[in-house]
Image (cartoon, one colour):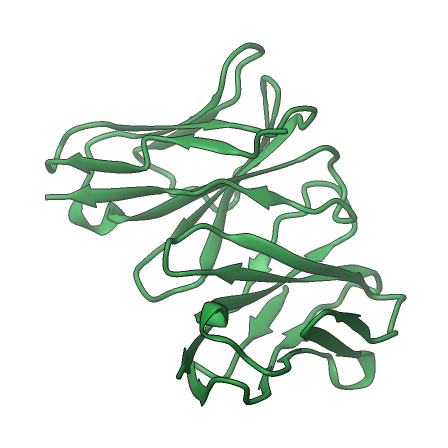
Length: 115
Length: 115
């Protein structure tokens, strides 16, 4: 069975602070994919990143960076110099590489960025 | 290139009525997934469909819920005799292929309220 844990229910930061959102996963599959999605107050789900289990290189995209550590089964997400527009619920998700690859989501972390 | 379309965006039903939710996948995508998000929770997988086939319905409640993805037209998630506990956001996602290496792109969701 697969499981994704986002222990941080809610985080509040002041604009320009850096913030890290934690994601820990469990799976018996040897190959799998990890995802982050953003759900802003408007409610839609926005895809941010996909990472496969063979690629442990960290990734940076603008102010966003992701740290994948297979040894600790973690896929953490850091926002540098946070902005009010980053306020949203962020979901980490896991799928395996076979067919019918449904996503298993964590419960989400609500990030509130204030001025 | 239009994204995943869902309608209606908001749906209000009284207990005992039927709810019909529609999803048109992205152009070129032939695989559709339905997820349910209860208030303050993460998304839970319901069903995965290809054109005219249900591939995985392991997350679907055994009664009152059904889904289809006909050869022509959108995918439909049908909930018969709705109850208050069905109130949730229902998201549809699509991908071009079956395997987990393809990202699922989500629609804006349908918010169902059962009075």
